[in-house]
Image 1 (spheres, rainbow, N blue to C red):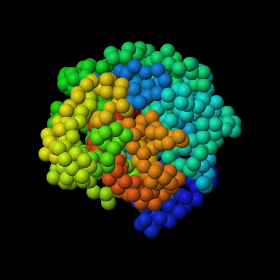
Image 2: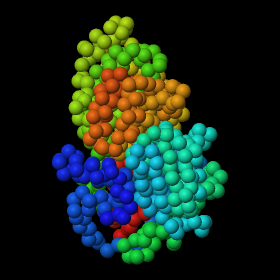
Image 3: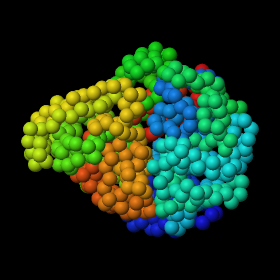
Image 4: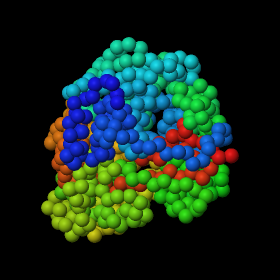
Length: 546
């Protein structure tokens, strides 16, 4: 058992667990977020540790893992706005924490953390002796520097909205390995936000461009990086984590990532022919192409990843909530899920809270497909002859295109006449917050609390935060969200989430007809690749059979 103080909320949760008022998973998630190690949390809650599984195949060292993925143009990790921008770089840089596939968050570069009773003061303790690949030791000064980057408007940080509860001037160095983080408001999710894909830990001397300064604590060295083409990573010999054989990780000698274009068929062909060992972020068409092929290992994981159809609620014709509801009533959700995802996902209810989120509320049913009711609402809103709108969609996101095409046909029955405006994803991202109507990719977060502040809130001046692409601001919703951020008990937070989901469904500017499963697909020679709901490529412990 951990010798440091056990947070009183953990002891309360233990009693709820005994009474059957809290699930085992919710208890483990809460206890680890509040500072207990996963092992200690298991001991406290259940009295025994799970037995470790013995490896079925001896691990071998060496070899090259080849992956097909996008090789994005990047400079500062704090500006990452896509998971794909992190795939190569998370092997060069590490994170302070790590959230495992079951949603439990563990220390990584951190040794531990501890939260005050009011959840407004967090003490972060670093592991000692970890070095960057230039030989410099990781210290508290580096951590404070990274917080300054994440919380900087001048940097243009994509974490700024997520970490809106953190005081930008509130990072206090206690000693070389201890930082106290002061929050503006209580929050239980800080450890999970420290695993955001843009929260790579950089040295305090960082000059602004990782392609020129690939200095991290990670298991690999970046030897080549050509945006749009390829990158090559080579194993460090002195990584701070040891493998099962007692030697430093990684097991692989190299990782090579290649971009084969925007056509998924090229990735599928490369995988089938053995040119690559895996495809990162594989689409449903690739899964279909290999699902019955015995040469591949496939893991399917439910997630909160989705394609959000959103409208600008500050622009016509979407200013009236009745028009927004009419659009939602034109969604034949079962058909969209079947055609866009081959039923590889779950139905959504037009709130951005998924069944894969810990706080999901199952009591808010989605709107039924009812074009007659939609037509009536349009008439009541002053559009008896319907509306003509343009839907912007990335044509290299096949799920988005399929969703858009189904909706276009079904919405005609209500008088919503949709013209599709397909474009490359790069062009979509150039204007994604400005479109009157669009379908946007949103990746998985284990907690809804990590998503909602990013996309559905206002800043201190009452203006939409940078990623609030619908420009929807609802004071009741925001008050409930701020209240929920200070509630550690998942069951108590879920009650607020039910209210928030209902508000989003009835008033919000987004449609979420589905949440997606994601797949980890590798050749069977590749072992040790951990599935990731976030679709993170994680190859530190991967190894390849000779």
